[in-house]
Image 1 (spheres, rainbow, N blue to C red):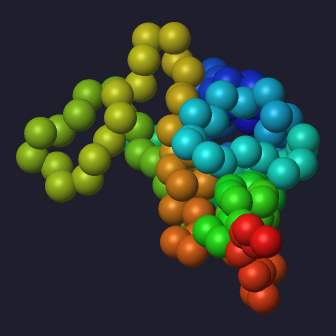
Image 2: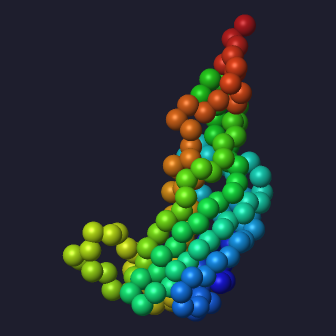
Length: 142
Ligand SMILES: [Zn+2]
């Protein structure tokens, strides 16, 4: 399985029928995350992917092992969080309007864009009250 590790695009032509598995080191600092107030803490992360290539659909699932930062809710210093959400996305050549499942259409180029799915996993992992440390005292104005 070939993955463009900056654009996070899987090349469909590199997949075999059935289950494809891969582990990729991805340059977190070169990916366009575009998530407000969120930055990768380290330059590299590990992306584990499983892509099931079947006749009518391609199912993609995976896990990103990485640390990101978002401002602490009390002092605004960067606070680190891990990615705890899994990646799931389905793709198809011709969507069935009757199907309950949301599937993305596979483009002519044969490129499966998984950036959105990975971005979603990052967004779902953002803590609702991020703290730089459990006993953060907040901004001191004295
Ligand atoms: Zn803090």
